[in-house]
Length: 208
Image (cartoon, rainbow, N blue to C red; front, side, top):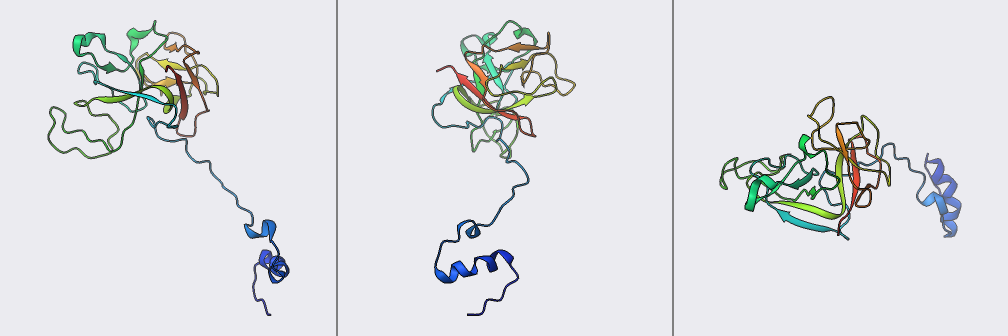
């Protein structure tokens, strides 16, 4: 039998092939992966179990602006209270209602009613429809890392000051910044990973 090849690995494996023996490592050769896969998309529920997800009205006064955004109950809405993002007036909070979940598919009708055509895949959740909120489980969120990166088991912070300098009002942060952030209760909220190159990290909510 004549074997013609320039592949060094195959030439080394040829005797074993002819004898019908296992090739061991030569069966797969070596592989190098140059880049790490991204963590995921903000608002994605990363683990199907356990997860506690509830629908909630989107506040007509101060609506949710991003998937993966922390939210609290908008008490200004009265009987029709929905959920809203956090802002400068929430400096005393240590707990949130939950995190807005990214559904698929989803489409905003129009900015004012339930008919019309708006493309799929928009970043902002529909303002005229309820939103899903995860209250217990694992979810992917965007985390600001300018003051410090999140670490597995580490505390969770939310930026409540005005947006600016790379920080987003109502967004998660990996470290505290005096007067600009609030710290969430470490019993109920913690990080389960560092952030990837896009600033996305896995958040644990223990409010079951």
